[in-house]
Length: 108
Image (cartoon, rainbow, N blue to C red; front, side, top):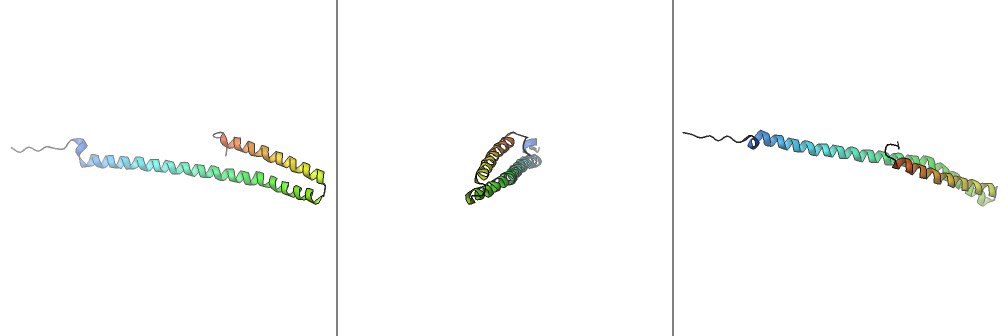
């Protein structure tokens, strides 16, 4: 009489292969998810940088021009008032931009 003991289903090669493939699939899915999150963060930072450059850059450039006019003495009072107005505008714009980007789903 010959006794042959077959392995249980969880001891077979195909089950071990299936577990390995499932584990590798889960790790790969997590990796792809993390890469997508990093890409989203990068895009958000790029949009913020673009907004800062476009909005605040032009305002600060006009502040520079009016400051140079005030220093040279041409329309000094008017130039200083314009500098003050532009700086107030830049501050409010920056505050609005920060709040827009902090609210989930509200930024670009």
